[in-house]
Image 1: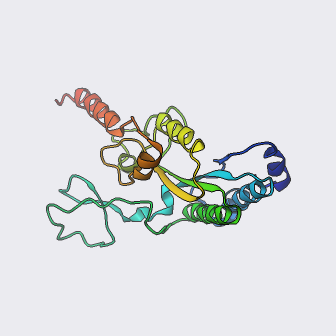
Image 2: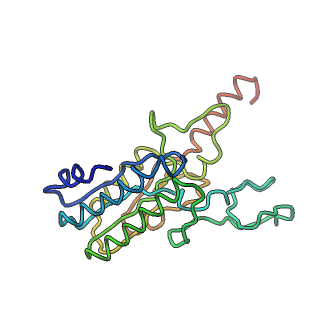
Image 3: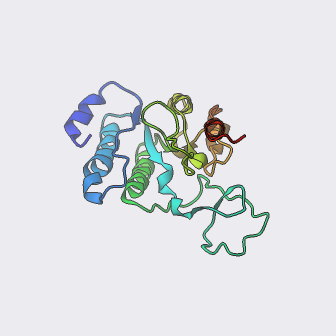
Length: 231
C-alpha cells in the first residue's frame, strides 16, 4: 500500500474499499510510517481520484487511552478512570465504558497511526460527500479464533475480545451501510466485561455479536480445577 500507483490500479472499477492493511504492533514511528501512515493516505487519495465514495478503514480501540483501564481490588468489574488513586474506591463504583464520542487519546505510535487514519477518513468524507467508516476493532486473534490462554485468561481480552465470527458479521453489515459523512463504530464480541460497547453498530447496523470470551474463561477454570484436584 506504500506504492501509490499499485493502489490506484487496484481500485479500478470498484465502488467500496475495505482497508485492513497495517502493522498492528507498537513499534517506533519510523517502522510504522510507510504502511500505517503513508499507505493509509494512499488509500484515501486513490479512492478519491478513482471516484470511489465509500471507504471502510480498520481503526482500533488503541485510539483510546487504554492505560486508563484498571482492575480495582475487591471490585468485580474493570474500571476506566482518570483518577489514579484507588485507595478509597467506593463499593458501588459505576462502570465507565469507552464510547464513540470520546476524544481519541492514543498512547503509542500504533494508536496515533489509527487516529491519523480516522482524521483522513473525515477529510475524505468532507471532500467527496461520500462515506468513510472507521471500525475500532477490539482484540482480534490471528490464528484459531481462540483467546490467547495460558493458565489464566489474558485480563485485557475480557474487556475487548472480538471473535472472527463477529468480525465477519460486522464488516458484512458495514459494507452495506450507506450514510454520507465519517462514522465510528466499535466492534467487539458479546463479552460480559466489555469496556468498549458496540452500541452504534447495534443501533445502526443491527450488529448482534454472539461470542463471549467468558465461555473460554469458564472452560479454562474447569480444566485447571480438575487438573489440580479442586472443584
